[in-house]
Image (cartoon, rainbow, N blue to C red; front, side, top):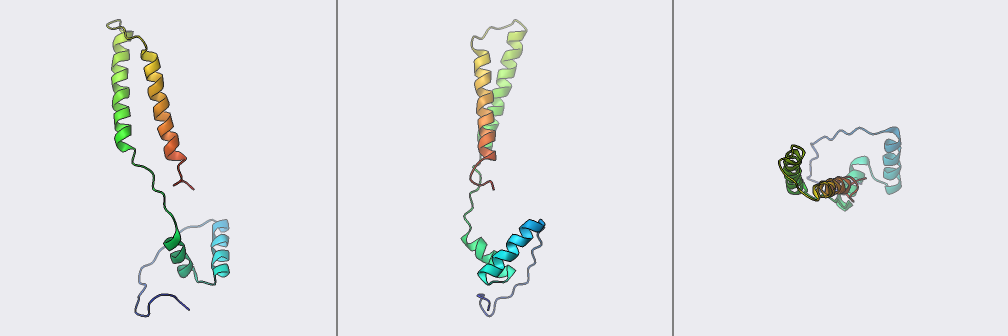
Length: 112
C-alpha cells in the first residue's frame, strides 16, 4: 500500500537512463524495501544527504587575474624592462594553488 495521501495526484513523469547494473541494484532495493520504484526513489530522496560543491568562482576569478598579472610581469622581465626576484617562485605557487582548487572540486564529498 502506498504511503502517499489519498488526494495526492502524481502527474509528473521522470525519465532516467541506467546501466544494467544500476537497474539491477534499483530493482533489488525496491524488492528488499517492499516498495514500488516511485516509493523507493522518493524514500531515498527524503533521506539522502547532499553535499553541494563549494562556490569557488570568486576565488578562481581572482586566481586568473593574478595569473594574468604574473604573465604581464614575466613579459616585461623577459623583454629586459624589469627585474623581479622570486617571480618564478610566485608563479609556481600560483599554479600549485590553482591545481589544489581543481583537486578539491573533483574530490569533494559531493562526488560519487
